[in-house]
Image (tube, rainbow, N blue to C red):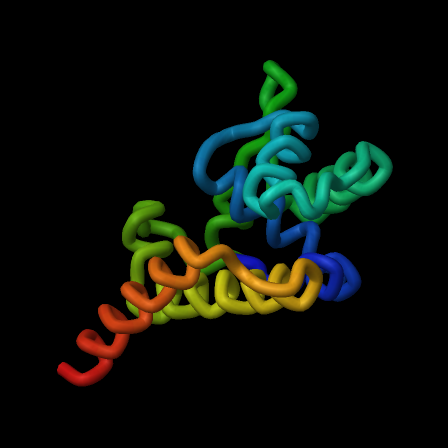
Length: 141
């Protein structure tokens, strides 16, 4: 979903990470931090000093609700704001456009890795070639 994590953080999009994650299931602030770290392949772990103020802002805006167990979930207003009211998660996240956007983000991530580390292993290069071939088949249909 997100390719260049440094640039992503600078654009102030932590709120969208949070909303995306709690859309899938209610989470505590600590769970959100863990999930962002996992989704960013360990490239970014937001601090409590960034997560909890962001959650407070989302609460004040009425986009999230804090449950008695301390987990946050999207409010109806949050669902409307994201345009997902009445849609299941799979309806919202599995459109061709969203899948292509996610693939593109992963390509950007791989570009960053290659720039940083030099090159990919031969095994990874073969897998990328297979993926490119399959994408070419889809594109040509």
